[in-house]
View 1 (tube, rainbow, N blue to C red):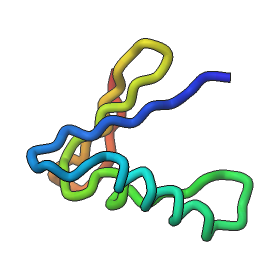
View 2 (view 1 turned 30 degrees about the vertical axis):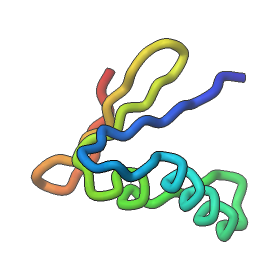
View 3 (view 1 turned 45 degrees about the vertical axis):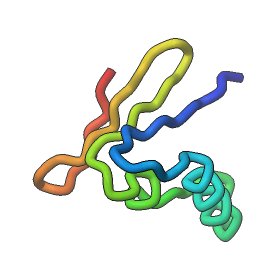
View 4 (view 1 turned 90 degrees about the vertical axis):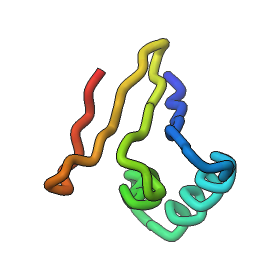
Length: 72
């Protein structure tokens, strides 16, 4: 099983730990087998999120049309 690490490009000093705690609280409220996390919670006002997976970086971007695009 691989580990998924999330990194957010930040311009402020808000620690990523607070985002992780909020995401955990949000997912505990969901009683399904799949975790659900709001994109707004993940992006936290940013337009891009960098996800590290098995040594590669993936970029989750919010477009001008409010669509999400995941690229390597």
